[in-house]
Length: 290
Image (cartoon, rainbow, N blue to C red; front, side, top):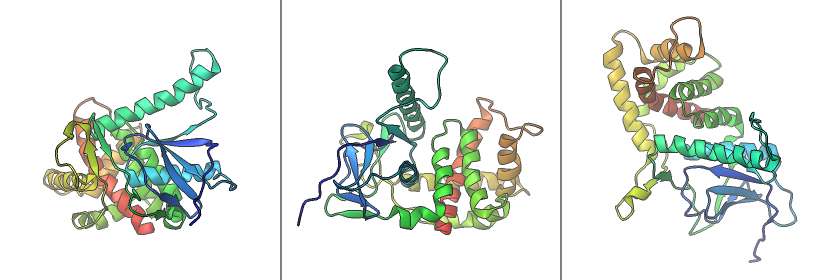
C-alpha cells in the first residue's frame, strides 16, 4: 500500500488544553484529512494529503467544536500567523502583543482545567487509532448540531460557573426552541440509565497507580444524580426544571429582579453542583438531535 504523505505547511493549530500529550494514532477525519498531534504540546493539526487543499477556516472552527464536545475540554484555534483578536491597552511590538494574546488564552484554559480536573488531571484522546486506522466522520455525525456544538464549546471555556450554567442552558433552548423547562422536566429521569460514552481520565499525580478505566462522564453522572436527590429534598413542591429556569437561568441572564449574584460563596457552590446536571442534559439534547 502506498504511503500517504501529508502537507507540512500548517496554517492553524487546534489547542486542546487538558488533553494528554501521549499522542493520536492513525486518525483521519471525514475521509479527507489526518488529525496530527504536534509533540510535545496538546496542539492538533487538521492536515490534508500532499497536493490537496487545506480545510477552510470555517471547517477548522467546526472541527474545534467537535473536539471540544467529544473531550469536554476548552479548545481554541491558534493560527500560525497570529493576530490578537482583542487589543490590550498596552502598546508594544505587534509580535509580542499577538503572542501574548494566545499564550494568555492557553494559561486561562489551563486554569479552568485545574479547577475541573485537578492541577495534574487530563483526559485521553477518545479515538487513539494505535492498532488500526480510525475514521472519525465529524461532518456526517455533527453537521446537524453544528450550532449547538458551538454553544457547548463556549460553555466549557467558562471559568465562571454562572456563565457556564447559562451557556449549557442555551444549548437546550437552541434544540427545543423554547425556554427548555418542559424538556428538562421530561428528560431528567433519563439521566439514571443514559450512556454518555467513555472519556478516560488520568493524572500525573497518580503515576504508577491503576487509573485506567476512570470515566469522566461516569463521575459527572454520579455527581449529577447526587445533586438531583439534594434538589428533590430541598425544593419541596418546586421542580428542578422550574428552579433551573426561573432561579438560575433567568437570575443569571437578567439584571432587573431576583438576580443571581456572584457572591464568592453559596451561589458559586450551588450552581457548580447544578452544572453537572445541566451539562449532561445538554449532551443528551445534542445526541437526541443527532
